[in-house]
Image 1 (tube, rainbow, N blue to C red):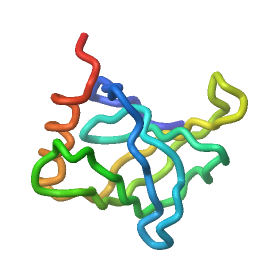
Image 2: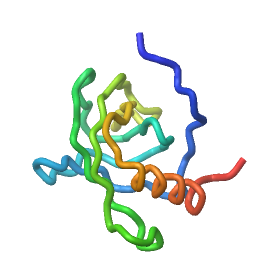
Image 3: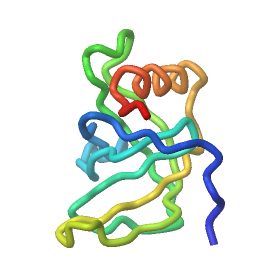
Image 4: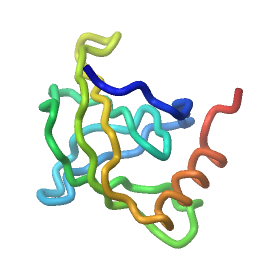
Length: 114
């Protein structure tokens, strides 16, 4: 069983590309994000209980960096509501404090507010 999240998921106004940092392959697109984890939508099901090295492209409005690089472990994967896609949840393992602040900035500027 996987752990319950402590932070509220934040959906962004558009999907950001999630790349495999080692191969530069497009793995999918960011659906939602917290400082602790992300959900990715992809055409192919991603392996669970696996560590991934990600590169996430940032919008130009996020000053100081074009991309974030971090490691995350896949915790679950299931069919999306659209059966052509899969949703996979990840727990972020390795991110710098500066990049965590960029995620906060990303959520603030591009997240749906409720």
